[in-house]
Length: 351
Ligand code: F0G
Image (tube, rainbow, N blue to C red):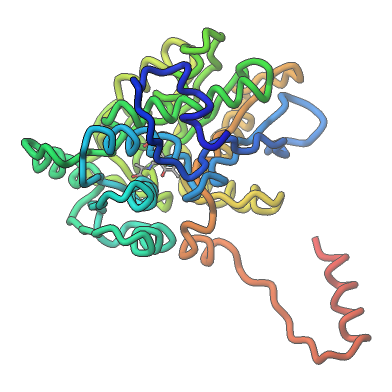
């Protein structure tokens, strides 16, 4: 089966839509993660690699449904405001659907890989002054009375519905819901989707821990942030549209919102990269949050507990930040075998 619509539409009401717009999203790996505490104790930690989706982020799960329904309704243009990943996904799925895509981004604040994706798929890129929230508000005003246009931000209910599929997959893989689920929160659509996903299956949902960057911690602080700022540009958002649903998810499951500093986010990105998992800064937030909860003694060190971290986007998306976070380890080799042997020996001893 190709894509999440084919696999899960029996749970949804999509009507008799026949032509599905898909790039084969979903079925992302859930792999064991070395925890940020000494190994051999505490909960089991799993990471869901959402960067393995076709455009390198979880957005594809929502985009396949939103674009399928938009095309079926005769829409010709898909528009979104974005910190980058929604834009990349909208551009790819619109291209697949034979529709036009127009993406509005905060000028100068979107990671290069995401801009490249928008360019590659031939979408129109519009830059506005101000953060994501300004872009989304302006776009929503401009959308009024445009019958051919479809807004594919997470205010589009099909987006959230599609993103529920990640929760279904976790339950399939674990045989149940995890006890704790840690997820980055920006516009708060994805945490809403997971919550609805577990509820739709009728399983007991995990405790939801929403991770945010300190400079954009609107949920943690319970207020809008006028000028959000963080190295994790994907979640540089000050006025989450789905704030109320995210609050419900956390309240109902006795979870929490937790903020971490940019330094903690970059350290988490490095700790994950050093175990082979390359995620963009926003997606390293759950690992940073887990480390913080453990250090503060707020995480039960119970080996029966299962924690799932949602790694929302691939590390290659934000090469600028990664190139600053990871210094190259290079040496010159003169081609002589004995020199190589010495270099390799040094590498074996390198810690
Ligand atoms: N992680 C990544 C990599 C993201 O791109 C986003 C959101 C989030 C987490 C947060 O998800 O907004 O549902 O709470 N990116 C959006 C975008 C806003 O435009 O690409 P959320």
